[in-house]
Image 1: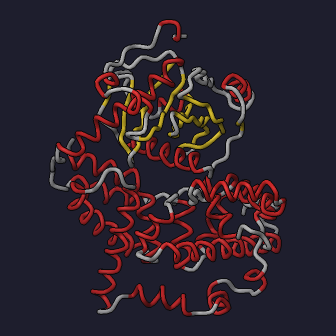
Image 2: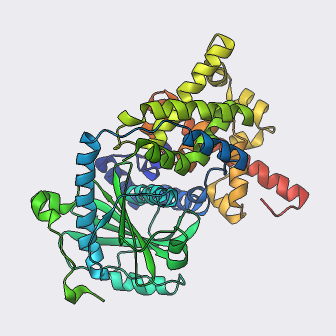
Length: 274
Length: 195
């Protein structure tokens, strides 16, 4: 390729491995180079069609059973209360702040927080974090972008057979980036991307039938799981499941408000409830 | 929280990935299971001090890689990693291609993503293409494309510089295209439509 940008840089760009400045350089080049732009487009299509859907082969059932027996035989231990406790509080704050911002418009209220993940929720949370990272790095392009939440909602109505409610909060702290039909643990979901004060937040809308398969109790309403530095909040509202992924310590309220304020969470205003 | 319950949840959520990586390393299901059990015991001992901000999957993979090297050292009295990894790196592309991907053309004319899209491979076909890759490249391609690890995480898992990760990934992707072309050719010869 006779270009300012090498093929290696294109792949680093697609892999989300470039710095912000390097990304900007590549994007500027792509705007003026049809060959490289075409390479990016086809690579993205290839990844979306094949690579993003690849999952590891399932472990043989007999191996799975032996692993379960081994895990059950491990000696019980307690985790250290100091560091996880602090991280946990920060994480819960961050996720709850995101919930207030995004969930308020969905007619939600934060009443209590659940702290007992089961394997199915862990699996969902891990898949949500994977998708969130790919969305944030631009590895999974949006099907619809540069659109208002209402326009996106309309677009998804004709694409999926479950209800999609997209928060439409008018706030300088929050920007709706776009959405795509994506896959979480083998299920079609709607993935929505937001920027909240320069941090990425992803909201996954899950068909109710799939949400029910998680086997979660109705109370507490919000299940919060800490995975790989992210808070994942899982809940159901008006016949639809949701999973929200946000970064610990990066939420707007951590910048603009005191921790005490953030913990004083109240139900969303009545005007925002559906 | 009870550490064992948390560890169990982490392992069960990543079990398919862990076993898959064990199979890539050992290339035998029975060895893979032994390695997996060894890794789980090692990981549980260290789980209390694991930094929760890091990727638990990358952490487990790194333990597995180290455990694998230890096992092979014990078994052969010298590290087998040096044999199959460096051995492959010393080989020329032609030698590697002749040994692992019969046929010459597709090493030099890799299929473009556009062609693959137009010719409608299935997900399983792509998976088979990855399985056919030589271990050195398959490892990096799987860690990136299936497990979603970053370059840095892959570098930590395989214990190589990030530049090596990038070059192996680039080469692995080229070989994958070649492997997919091979699969498409087989399909066209046999008239099969399930790849």
